[in-house]
Image 1: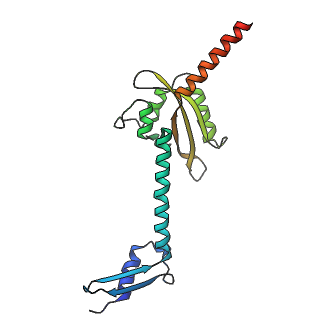
Image 2: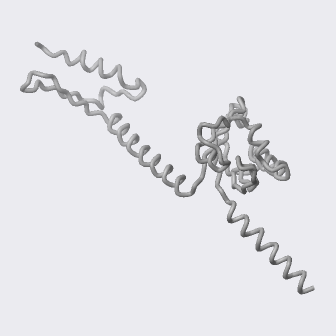
Image 3: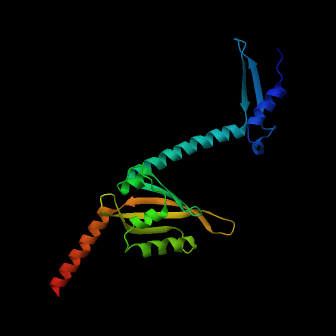
Length: 199
């Protein structure tokens, strides 16, 4: 049986992204193996680069996952036009919720936020959405499923804007800072107590 290298090349070419194909950069080596099967090797810088990028991407994803697990940080991703927010299982755990719990509406987050922290929280978000700050960061209390408030740090950044520059997607992290905040509050109370004793 005679091999038609042009047909084989055309078939392979149809599988690759058209913008990245260069006939000059690709060479096709075909051989008939002893078991009479056809084998070929495609040498193309695009495929090599794609493989390298995929490998680097996997390593980056693993590092990011390890860093998040080590820091006990949760991820959130807010689609502004639909007002739907994705919360990772780590973020839900901060609230004492199960990953199966439905919590994808920003209004639910409003209800979880401590009423005294709402104004400052949204002032920080609005400032970032308007481009006045390079990122969003705020410390606030959220109501957990146990009925108690917990201090968390929320950080975020606009990751997508429309053609007019309006923010349409914001993503970031939640970090449990409860113990750190409790220490700060205790130190503040103690310093006020000792200051009042001196006067």
